[in-house]
Image (cartoon, rainbow, N blue to C red; front, side, top):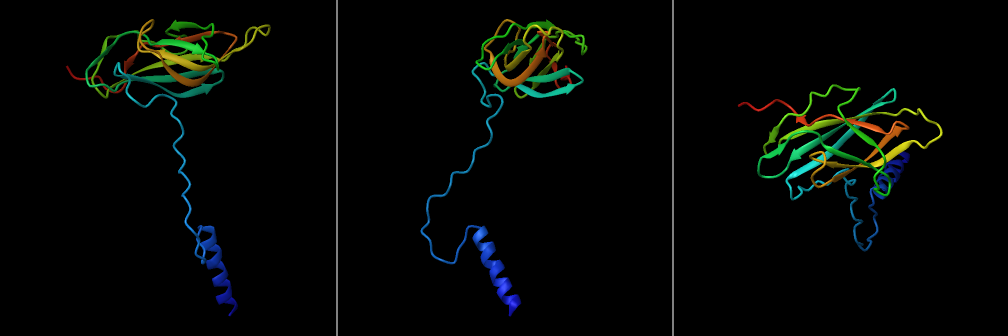
Length: 186
């Protein structure tokens, strides 16, 4: 008898936990389902046919590296040659005083090479910096966003939210775009 009563109590508890009850209740509106977290970059393909996306930052012993990808999301081949344009922005998306250097003392940069990306193909570049404080009299430079363009000095900027903690160095290195994955056969 005790087992039956215990089983019945457990069944009622399970039904209540699942949102069910034995009484007839009017059905209200269902709660809206939560939407996915917002993307760090725009998922739609822009008019120029390329989208730039930031990858997670790899940090070790004060050295930081962040990959960025350029994807041809359009329908025609896209030519790229050189270095991405990079600006570090604050929380209000205002440019910070940061020196952008082509190449880096952290990672080898093979330099620019002309690339033609077919629809769906990617190119990759790497941003590198050191979180080093060499001057305690000034403020550390901490960017909240990156404004990235396919070419240094040109193109429509695409904004990526990312902490860029430069310390007091104020310097960010960037490699040239290179093909991600195997090179196409000629």
